[in-house]
Each structure stands twice: as structure tokens, then as C-alpha cells.
Length: 166
Image 1 (tube, one colour):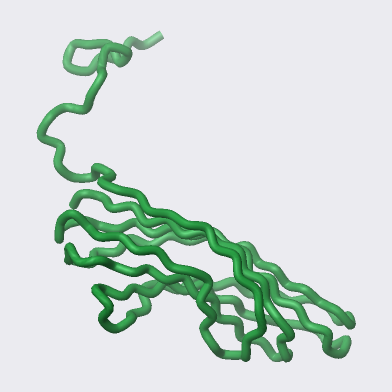
Image 2 (spheres, one colour):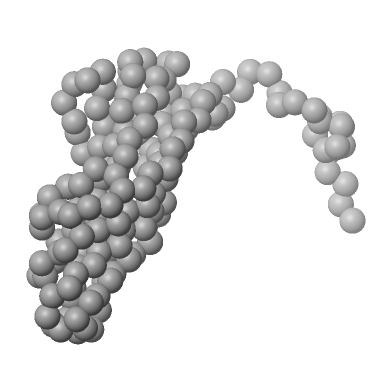
């Protein structure tokens, strides 16, 4: 059995990280869960939810993580249903203009039926370098492209923003 030592101390004797490590520390975590339902038109972005975080330093990185399920349903004819579901991260700094950061894609199809539901689970992450200490709003939106007429959607998601010292 190997004995692991750090600076001549056993691992169990280490109670803190060495001093002088200034990067990679998690400075703050903001998170929220969202649930929304409704109708949407094809080729539109639908907001699921958003969170705000104010970085402590301009050198900080923001690790965004999301998990979600977007369920689409329709009552149309029995044709096959094909869709591409996009989960999109947007960023707005201090009420400025919104910019798209990242897109996670999921493609799915279902055989014909008079009532159909597609509900992909999508998880994704993105590292942002906002270079600001102003408040940042991170929004999560869904975009569904399909050949069919959607009757409605249900979205449940969570969004986490972690500020990491840079």
C-alpha cells in the first residue's frame, strides 16, 4: 500500500490549500430552476428563464451549466414528427444588448400518431470570459425547428453560474 504525503504530511493532516493559489477558486454560485408552458410559433426563441451574477473581478470566468427537458406536443394528423431542439445561452451585461453565447442541439423524431410528444433531455455547459464587474444576466432559451405545427410546449430546466477566479 502506498503512503501519500504532501509537504511531508499525510493527506489526512492537510486542512487547507497552500497559500498563493489565486486562480481556479470558486468565488460564488448562482442557480435557479425554471418551469414554463405555453404555445409558440416555429422558428422563434422562447425564454425558459434567466439568472443574474455580478463578477468580483474582470479576470473571472463564469462556468454556465444547464440541464433541461423541452417537451413538444401536437394533435395534428398521423404524419411522422421530426424536430431539432436547440437550448441557447444568451448574455446581457448591465442592460446592454443581448448576445448569443452557445447552442446545444438535439434532434429527435417520432412515428405517426394522432397525439405525439417529443421530450429531449439536454444538458450543456459553457465557460464565459465576460471581462466585467457589472451585473450579467444569463438567459436560457429554447428554439424548436420542425416540419409540423406545434400545439404547445412544456419546458423544465435549471441554470447554474459559477464565478471562478481567473
